[in-house]
Image (cartoon, rainbow, N blue to C red; front, side):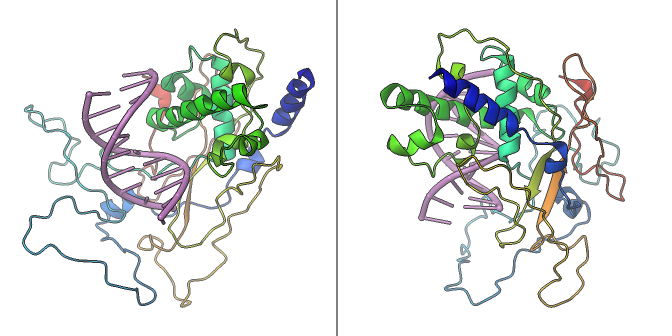
Length: 310
DNA sequence: TTAAGAATAT
DNA sequence: CATATTCTTA
């Protein structure tokens, strides 16, 4: 159906998020880095109520294997090479959080995924490799690994899509449910229309795709508490956009007590925003807004500046 | 429990 | 880099 093409294109174009829509309201609180830097022990979520059973069966005398501190990063020593660590930062006794620390896990919002798809479509399947995609997306804080992981899953999704579209009907999200695939699965991928040539390996694709709009992604790190309403509404419908303002700041703690901004990692939803101050490289569009979060320590929360390129 | 994202391995 | 598998966490 030719009309569908223009149709989904229009919708797709229409759904392009504005920077404002993506602009998170929340400020960043503590990061794992800071927690580590401040020697803050895991304020692991305390059992609010009596749990059904006490989960911790401490191994009698077995050597502690890989214990899993809730959010604390285990100090892994990747530099196990024989080379002496001469160039390690500056202080030898202190930790070196600059690397080896875990950053908050990326949440692929529909918008972010949209940009991802956009980038892949623009690049073409051939050039759509993680690094290139990452660069084109120009999202600050986005790592190649993030993209690679997402790309991996997305390819699987496309594969499933191909099988379905060849067998049944269109590639609409709605078709998924009719094709026996759970619409409930692949929420995210279904949120953004899949360019036709993604499913047609033979088709030569042209770069008839638009210039992306600047984007800001939100990297969020929330606890299992039903805190902020950050997560995107799983409508696989053509919902316009969920402009949820994450205002978890207005609510005071349960006990009305003040919480130290630093030592309150638990229970506080943190929305880490990875905006896109990217350098104006040769093809990438420089985002208008470029505010970087920088804690009082002078240490970047999320250091990752593609200035050096690869 | 499930699922998303990350880590790790091939 | 791609893919498979496993792990952690929301």
